[in-house]
Length: 288
Image (tube, rainbow, N blue to C red; front, side, top):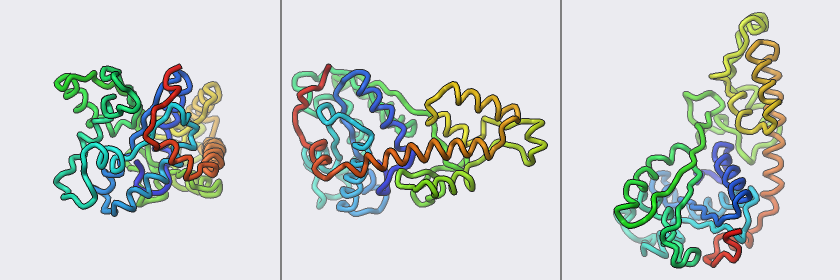
């Protein structure tokens, strides 16, 4: 869960992939929002964590998930209160985040979704930084009589300034957010996106770009859907026939279209839609 009201593109990638999986396989989907984690580590009030969770849920719903196959829950509302009996007034020592993160890997946590199906296998698409939690889960699962969950982890998504830096809500120039305007996207990419191009046009024409460190290329790897165009850009840029400015202009166009599309979809998400996705209920069309 993001620690700000809006997601950045690094947050969005796992949800885009998960939406593809739901469309392809017509399977039930459970989305966990870890608002308790933000309360423990981000010095936020419980009320603010719950509010941010609903705002994040709107961005997630805007990705196009099927409400008849999707259940979204927050730890504080579902696991924290409904299952473990923890209230906002309880001592913080009662809260142990890793097991709470792990528990939704097991279908028995959702009796309204999977009654009598405790041995269903769980597939978890997630960012690579979540791996330690679920390696722990895989170690524990057989000992408590459950199937090990499987994971599909997204590759590292760098900050605009390069792989040695981290996207951070405290530095809005480290990432592209789904609330950014086209003008903001253009300014961020042109000013901050680390380039693998050479110091001068002459040198670039001679030596070409270093694609291993070039952030615009890394972003296009994720978001440019035309593989033939991507291969062409990489070849031309690596051999010096395409300049950094041209690559950045293509990235600006791709990201501006992506973010504008998301903003249009997000604007259609109402509080009633959030309530519908978060309602504890059976899903009538879970499979097929």
